[in-house]
Image 1 (cartoon, rainbow, N blue to C red):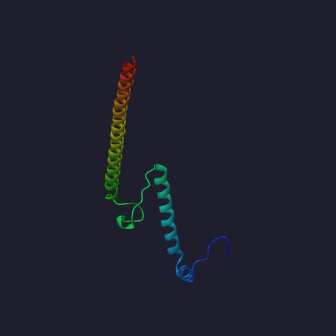
Image 2: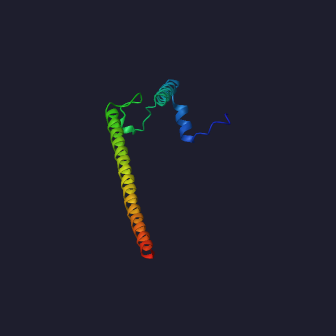
Image 3: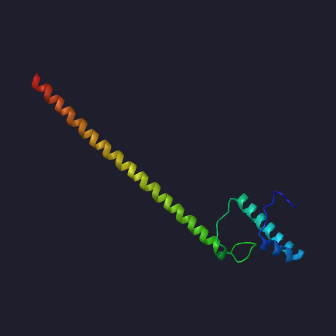
Length: 121
């Protein structure tokens, strides 16, 4: 009895007791291959989330998945670029409007002060 291993349900225990050693080794081998593939994808930085319906086997993904991932990445990058451009344009517009209104206000203040001093002299 292993104290650190979670106890399986009774139906799972019955299924495992009925399974042959060959079946268990096949399942274990598939699990090891999937774990190795996940490690390789993680190390490459190319880990992606995909649904099981897009996969044809447990050993790899279909070729349909790669172009779709590239298209999605390109679409995300275009969206990011558009957001950056919009932010840049908004910042430029706000800066220009701020400069325009403050310079007009400063000009009006100067003219008002000069005309007040001119009346006193």
